[in-house]
Amino acid sequence: MRDYRIAVIPGDGIGIETIREAVATLQVASDLHGGFRLQFDAFPWGCTYYLEHGEMMPRDGLATLGDYEAILFGAVGFPTVPDHISLWGLLLPIRQTFDQYINLRPIRLLPGIPSPLRFKGPEEINFICIRENTEGEYSGVGGRVHRGTPEEVAIQTAVFTRAGVERVLRYGFELARKRPRHELVSATKSNAWQYAMVFWDEVFRDLQREYPDVHCRQYHVDALAARFITAPESLDVVVASNLFGDILTDLGGALQGSLGIPPSGNINPERRYPSLFEPVHGSAPDIAGKGIANPIAAIWAGAMMLEHLGQEEAGQLIIRAIEALTREGRALTPDLGGRATTQEVGEAIRAHLRALAG
Ligand code: GGG
Image (tube, rainbow, N blue to C red; front, side, top):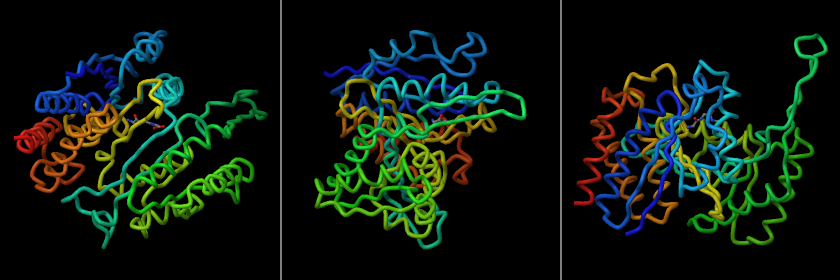
């Protein structure tokens, strides 16, 4: 019997509701499998914690998380706390401290979900985006001077290191090599960003020599955004910088029919530190507390966590249960045109899980 200790940070808004369903579903998956156990320890960190303590997590929060095998995360941000305080007080320090330099985001239209694109269905919308996750535009380097005066200056510096760029691109090549199409697309903007993105393109070109079996293309990020809509079937593995990947994958969420569907894994591939799994969606203050948030993304993120921990069979079973739910189309939350609650969708997925295992 294998035991895993999982830190759970539901965070803010709908993260609390969707992660509750993810934990319940993971528990059922572990019971059905019988070969591993999950011990969940929940941490109440986030904007409510901030209002009480003046910080998003305790000083020793990162050290505490370091003892866990993985982290399951809900969402961060609420109108009670400025967004840059909440994001830089919780999620971004976790990604940087635990060197989670890969942010893996599958973009796949699930069966039964109406496609937002005419003539493009699950066959055409099925690719994966790798977002660089610890540096680039989200390095946190910059400053402001002469605040509130006409001379005010704000500087935000994107930091691209050779080590950082090479490792994320290499991950892209390796992933592309494992998939049947052997195709890799790099998002650039080297016409305007004549230093950082020209450098990114050079490293991409250099690596191609080591991967002659991988077919490579690069697009300026604006053209690539258009391609997400006009020709998603031409994409298999996409690798992008931190900001570009962030924006492109919200577009990817829209392609999946709802931002309540896509999951993401913030991964330290060397496994020196815990990896973090979360829904792509944020805290959605407009529907928080109403019990109608879509739990699919959080549950799918839990499945990705199991796969990362080496429990591929259990992770795949959860994904098949999600597919069974969407194919059937009976229990869906309002974002997908249904009337079910968060809990009802969670329970329906667990029912499918039991049926598939049975
Ligand atoms: N569960 C994802 C979440 O809370 N997202 C909030 C957000 O703004 N994230 C920015 C990022 O992923 O870099």
